[in-house]
Length: 190
Image (cartoon, rainbow, N blue to C red):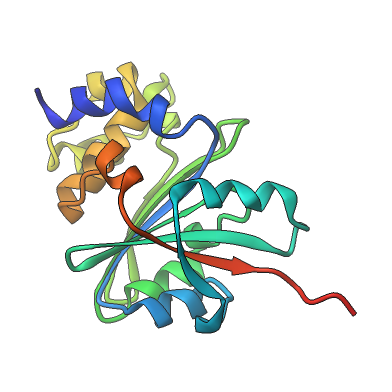
């Protein structure tokens, strides 16, 4: 089965709610934690489900799941989406690479790829499935085996396929069930 078809079948069960995923190479866990506004002492081990705790927190608080996968760190956020911020991605990709994919319930979405502190490409993946698609991004995605037809069929599967082609990291049930670090950023009560 192709990577794209695997994501078409799987992605809805992995992410039942909108999310922000950021893949980072060339940075360590402490650097990623700081880029997300946390401190290393706020990190513990925990299951994927702990990321849902973010829904119970104040807007300036959050949870970031961090998964070491070979030489990449994959982060998941459900409420704050710091990993998709342009400045955050520049910092995370300095001396390496970073890929971010984020979408909201309103289908505001962004796919960004940064190398050595500069953003190589940044576009709305949802738009690529519409008649208002941007030819330059469809052409760019063709390097990773994604065509206009792929975008029209399933924009999330297309975006995840590109992310896997860049990073080599498969986001699947085995990853979800695997070991994770959890950054819990709660403000102390005064």
